[in-house]
Image (spheres, rainbow, N blue to C red):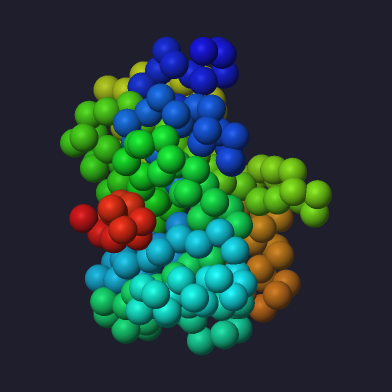
Length: 240
């Protein structure tokens, strides 16, 4: 196995699709972090007793899948149900939702293929997810999904690294890889100024310029949720 798989450590950190496939493959648990906004949306919906079906693309097949699952289909921002944490705060309790996302959903699909338990985390629920992971006592890989450039290449997103560090920071007794330690360092540096960091980072600026500052503010809420969304056998996230 190549050294980039971080096999000497029980808590690992990496980025995007390739990180899931290469580093996550030898893990008991894979945590998917896409703060703006997939995993924040998952936290909010499952925290209201709902379930979230990840879906990689927003096209006619997504609508067909939502109909098959008797679920709501999240649309574009500005629609009543979308990939916007703010609009999901009042979603009916117990809702079933299909959530298309090119980053968080795709990483979830790849993570499921490894056979690991798949968990969604964000800043809001990072401490709760960390406590759950410690109870499971297995090897964990934390994946920062990041964003994508126009050519499809990974664009690292600091909000995902900070949230990954927030989770890894809470894992006592784990051997953190150097990559994981750097994520923790990023969190510690930003911890006292999380709203400002998310507002000023590239992803936050993009959403604010589009008219969604509340999405950024919600995503910056640290330790505000006790929800632990785990992917079930029906390929849906639900709170355990």
